[in-house]
Image (cartoon, rainbow, N blue to C red; front, side, top):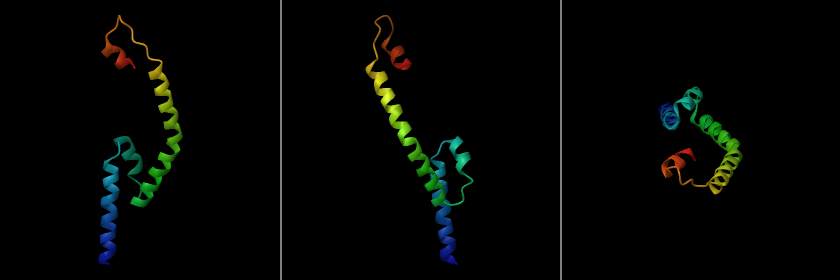
Length: 83
């Protein structure tokens, strides 16, 4: 019984440690998940789903950076912020 209570406490602590690292909007979505293992597996699944999308986004950013042209009549800071 003591071991089960300790395991439940560790699971609670780990789950909440992970939840505290999430953005508030994600916290609200994932806070209802009961165990650390289920939470971790769901986050991993979502990460893998977005991996391909992330590669496409990085490629888009690199292409946009390579096409960047500075304009003399504008400040460098305003152009960087726009980028």
